[in-house]
Image 1 (cartoon, rainbow, N blue to C red):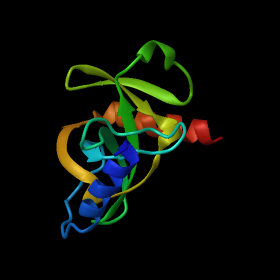
Image 2 (cartoon, one colour; image 1 turned 45 degrees about the horizontal axis):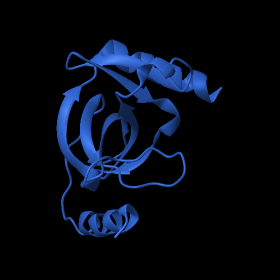
Image 3 (cartoon, one colour; image 1 turned 180 degrees about the vertical axis):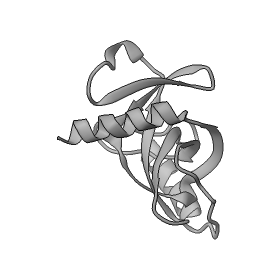
Length: 130
């Protein structure tokens, strides 16, 4: 089986969950991001996990999120990325990969982004879109 097949099996299980999590903006969660196509960001491991910042909560089911990465930060110094610290670790928000997520994807909370970093992320998203 390839990773797309593995992801489709997990995605079916996630879709059948009957739960909602009370999320908060600025929170960082590990979510089941999945196996995506082309240059879209993927999750890692058997659960296809990636940390995500909650940028905007719409309701108890949907939120706008930004995937994070910690790999190869030297090449990520442009308008599509924002480097910051969370839990004393260097992370990078992949601003160009902002998208809508269902709370069924959430596995667990791993931290909260400082208010200063959060406002800077929002500012940089606006700049990126202009």
